[in-house]
Amino acid sequence: MEVLAIIPARGGSKGIPRKNVKALGGKPLIAHTILAALAARRVGRVVVSTDDAEIAHVAREAGAEVVMRPDDLAGDVARSEDALLHVMDVLAEDGYRPDAIAFLQCTSPLTAPEDIDGTLAALDEQGADTALAVVPFHYFLWHADADGAANGINHDKSFRLMRQQREPEFVETGAVYAMRAEGFREAKFRFFGKTVMHEIPVEHWHEIDDPADFRIAEERMARLARSQPAHAALPETVAALVMDFDGVLTDDRVFVSAEGVESVACSRGDGMGIELLRKAGLAMCVISKEQNKVVATRCEKLKLECAHGIDDKLPLFLKWLEERGIDPAHALYIGNDINDLPCMEAAGCAVAPADAHPAARSAADLVLEAEGGRGAIRELADLLIASGRIAPLG
Image (tube, rainbow, N blue to C red):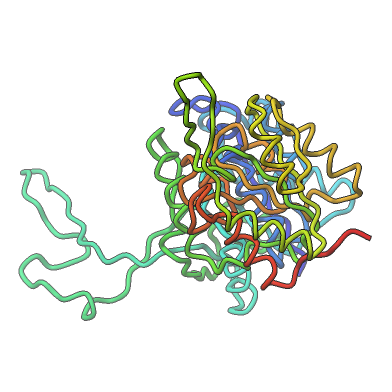
């Protein structure tokens, strides 16, 4: 079954201006849904429908195709279904006619590839026309009548059943919908014919509607990252490790003597971890914003390549990889603060110590149990060696 994933994303957003490109966990909001769609096994193509040049640019950077929609499909009352049909019409001009459509909402950044695949599987395997992602619902709903009296909607208020005695109920997440393409063309609405549900984990259900939702999403992302098996976040092949210094190889504190001499605290265990990784053949370097020569002194002792006093780390990070013929997808970057986010986003696997800034933890594919300067690098070294995924250069 050939599946086209479509992600509608208008430029106008009154509740949160520029919401779809606002940073969440080190990535633009829309990028999270794009990356999930690209990773879904059942999806063949991923297209973003937008009226906005910046959204289009961000979408292409994340790996999606873009179809620019006309102004009459970009207003506040424009239907998502019309944007989907427009994309289908544009692609049909080149002879592309998918069997099914996966309609994904970019305001649901916790959507996982398996949520998309599961909804598509339900459509295909249950012989359905439409499908949607849902989560179980166990709450009691009420409404007020014309006299202001409260009455139960999904329950009899005079007889309170226990949860296990009630019929299962489900909430539409708004994150994933699947439709047979030709049936959708005819119905022009997301639900037609036989509709089935796919239950997703409740921790994947979160929609961005107001500013507080960004903070909640970042916290959930960090918690989900911590709950995953550590090795699952690693690329299949790891060729390089690039590190920040302060907050990674140190505990992010600085000691200042009466004479103004600065010193830092490092972990000998981290030093042993770096030695083990060197023996395993892993390419490594440190890129730090810190001006103090203590960075170079420590790196010299650890036999690490080092560049410090670097304000914009990303260009140097990418250049260092390119000079060694290393694909960024096979590189790890470990950082602890907001100036590390661009490198974390560019790396195949972003890593953060346990005590990193919340934005860095949210951006991380892997959050370590150890803190910076207190064994974080040793923990990562042990994990890399145990995974057997290190691929020495040459």
